[in-house]
Image 1: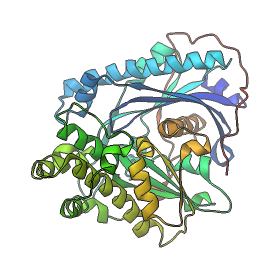
Image 2: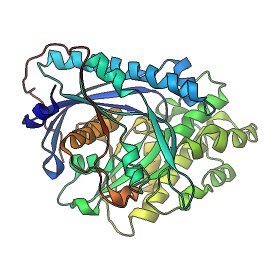
Image 3: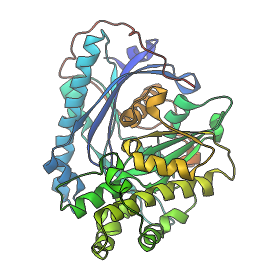
Length: 406
């Protein structure tokens, strides 16, 4: 479809794609978007997750992949993402909707944010040309480099979408996403006051602990059940919370380069095998919770008084972690994004659909107060559609509940 024709439409239907640092799979969300900038409005329609098979997940987690490995994975993930798009196109067809574009974050295989005079860069894979060819739709991708070129960290990028979705005129809301890495957005009534940062590790270190202690036979502590049966080990907790990242002031971002198993956990766990599996998991889970609580107390509350916290990402399913947060953040109403109309697992995919919309309109969508960029910039690159034709569908407006709700 001609991009000019897309922009003339009163509303656009988009598919957002996200593959996070936990390497669980591709999250895809189908949404309806009207407007741009501060006049943007969104309705969530549907979402799905296509899990990665274990061999592919292991290849993505390989910290020593060669250039050839990255090259091949780039195209392989492009095919996986295209499959997710085609699945959502079937949903759109049933709803009599015509999808206008795809917005893909891709999968990060390296993210080295600027620190002082050190070299920096970021690389997301999942070839957009493959997606455009397989689906026939234009694809917006590669969102992080432009922010970094403008002097930013390239992350977090969700704050723009968080404000569009969750801002209220009468309160300050925290949007806490606990994926592989945990990040928080402070959403005040006015957009210029928005800021955000990565608090540190999220599900990544919990999943890595499970994988290391079970020799790869298990991948996660479902609902935090095992951690709930253990007791945190004080000296191990102190060690985990002693990482230099936690004391850095925002803007800041991080990734597997600092909190991956090989650099953060493997030796520490090996030296504590005399403790129970449950106690080790309880400690790591407490470290995630305490690092989030400390970040909010240290970097948010001096300037803002939040009353609500909207939690999304895989960590929203960890009941033990949520209970830990509620206990450590008295006065905050801690609820998952599901209660606001967006499934916890779909929040980031929805966010990138919003960012893709802004790319098409030429609207800057980074938040310099969150990333440290020198100025607002338009994010992303556009790959025109073509090739495969999209499933036939009639234009229409689904009968959907409003997304935003108090």
